[in-house]
Image 1 (tube, rainbow, N blue to C red):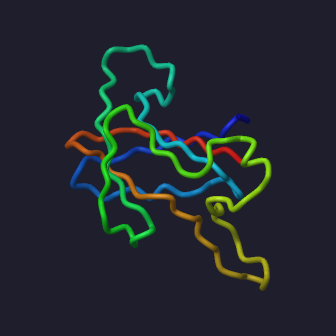
Image 2: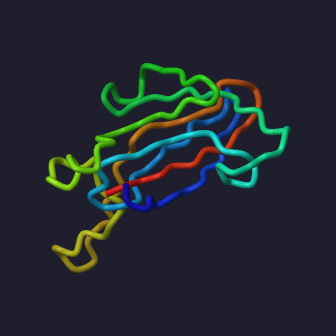
Length: 132
């Protein structure tokens, strides 16, 4: 796999407002979302990192049905097989952009993959990794 673009997001505790997770790489074909330690890395060796689990909604049903992700699991979107991605196929969406087809055109929002909130009363941090 190529080197992914990684982004860190703060996720509020249950009862807060779910955070939309946007596509930030145009033409992305595979995305992983996972909880990470407070320093925002996967190489954290401390003993005080306790993943909370996540609740998420999807655009398929207009973000209505809530799904759960247990602590330590990875939420995946797209095709993990790099060879399949090389042969094209439909990407997962686009990053936000300006409509240049008309001067002063509107901003076009990014594709939202999901909306996340902590599964517990404790806030958490996630990392998205996006591959072309």
